[in-house]
Image (cartoon, rainbow, N blue to C red; front, top):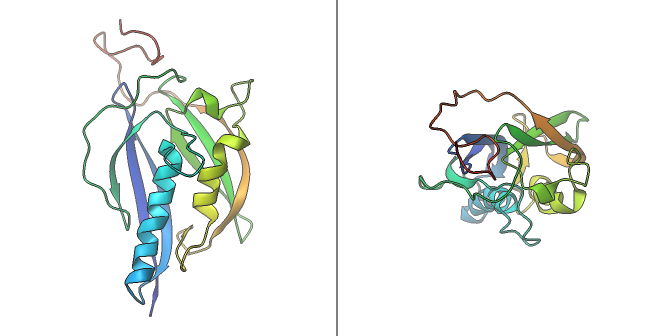
Length: 184
């Protein structure tokens, strides 16, 4: 009965076709099938929290799940995300989580929904992040999201809007970077 720490990544695509990936690690015991299934459940809870299929049904992203690798695997989906109103394609909702060793880890959630921010459109809304924080901090049958060293997360420190320049070239045939407006 060994405890394993394996990488888990999920890739989403927004309405414009730009992908974003969130990476974390999942710790689980390979003692029996129930423990291995718990690792799948941990990955599923993270994805459910991002797309709004969790208990609170509050989505954090308008992107659609493209693929996943790790204990929570998924077949490749080539669809585009929802064209609902959200901020620019280069925006991310940055959520900072604290681990039990006192180190801060940041997770960027791409194409965030407008409802994930307070009225200032800069600060993440705690009520919208409840499912995501619970998915990242819950230990279920010995399985949990963690750091590369297997250190579990204890809670959120802060969440805010981060804007970075697009890494992809936008041509005349591309849609507007403000994804709730028609293309040019």
